Amino acid sequence: MGTAGAGYPWILILLWSLLGLVVAATSGVVAAKVLSSRHRDGSRQSRAAEPPGWQEALDALRLRYARGEISREDYLQGKVELQD
Image (cartoon, rainbow, N blue to C red; front, side, top):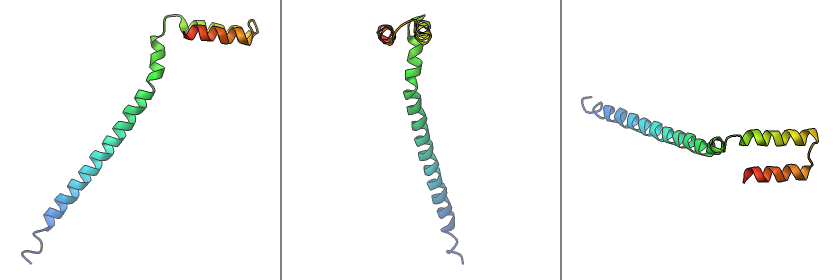
């Protein structure tokens, strides 16, 4: 009975170590996905770097097109010019 229980603590240490590795790997994968999704959302933040008044001009263009004040061609041309 004296030597049979001597290996038991090492099994617990091994299992806890494996559990720690699994948790660390899972955390790494989750962190990588969060960071990559933030990188993809960066295109939304780049709109904030547009010149002042750009969004208002685009909104005004859309409104004029919706009211029928300008044709589709004029709308598309204005949109292209605003994006340049």
